[in-house]
Length: 239
Image 1 (cartoon, helix red, strand yellow):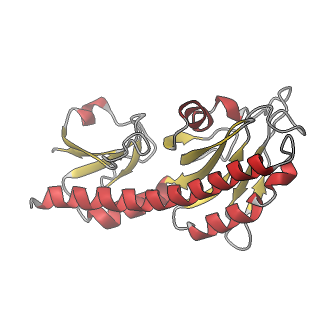
Image 2 (cartoon, one colour):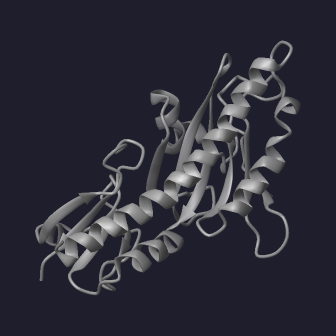
């Protein structure tokens, strides 16, 4: 096999395998949320989902090589205690994951309306898991991230479980698998932003320039079996 093609297939496989494991465990938690809502007597309250704190802490620890946080965004109007509710935990250098406070007051200048965010809207509207980004989560952690999200359907609406991946962690998986300096290879998100690259000139999180796209000689799907879930491509650039 051509060495470049072999490197691209190896890299696509490594990335897809790493992400698929995270998705699988997040979907397990999503099924637990659906079951808890169905088992609740009457309208589920926040107390029905108290188990999530430990479940998500274990999940963050298990996948600490890739993710930096995880949580749940509840369907609007699904909880009697509040019209909107978001619970998110962030990994810490030492100790347990820390709860991240978001301003959910619509009258506040710092209002974080998660219902308008792509990571919430896509799984809510399609009912399917998806990787969103890279994007800068303004109002969240204000850095460029990718969010893996899965729907948790209930009679009260679709809740969304999600986890945040840093580009630096993904770049590590990409570079270890690729093992090439030439040609330039870019891991590209569906929004045209660079997830990882083996070229110092092409920075992660930035839009791939038109002049670079014009040099593209090949495109390899990272997850050809389920492209909607992981819509990333490995782009090879000449010159």
